[in-house]
Length: 290
Image 1 (cartoon, helix red, strand yellow):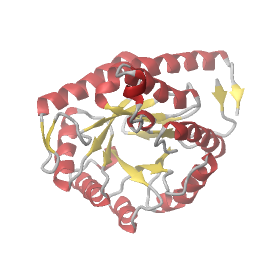
Image 2: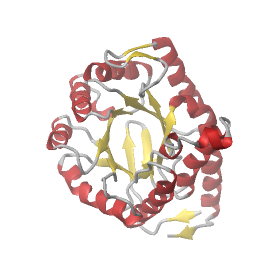
Image 3: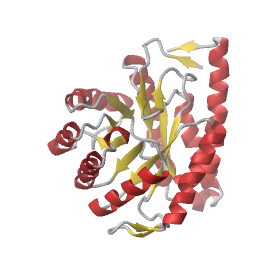
């Protein structure tokens, strides 16, 4: 297993620890809920949803977390301001864990951050995400709302190589720090199958040079693969989803946005297998320094 020579930082958000040497803390798994096309959502604009079904999914992820010991968080996705505020209220009721606020719209995320501050949830919020194109208002909101944690995403139109990803993150970190974010989570950006390996290499570089918690949305590699069912059949989707989520963990990822929360039943046991193996090897001192 890998041991990084650089001291690894551990962020504690709520009661959840993220970061450290591989095998020190279990990988944090983040499932998406209320995402575009999610069957439990009745109306994306108003935020109407099937509350009982949503609660079942949250409880299912919590159950898998309890069985494996792997921390489980929610990536709360919304397309409108009203819906995000509504989702925040629900999540705050059904879990005491930190959660991510996520939207394609900066305006929606800003509203969500302000609402979280208004109702006293700012210490539980992880802003998803800050990237090079983020507007000044987003940084101002992070500061004003006292949001301590944010995903720092290495996405830029001309970013291709692993080093490009590393450079983007390094350029963003001073801005994030100035905005009062003391617990950044570095996302090395996966968009398709080829980018998965590049993201993993960037993750290795960042942990070895900076030591901050790193991870990625590995599931994107499969979500954007339009021909997978045609080529391999529908059953291949699950096996490939497991594979892409495990690869970054082997390289030391501290967190993974694993995709739809429904996938927790087979993602958590698979990740537990890797985590348990790493903890055992760590205890034996069998390290490969990097």
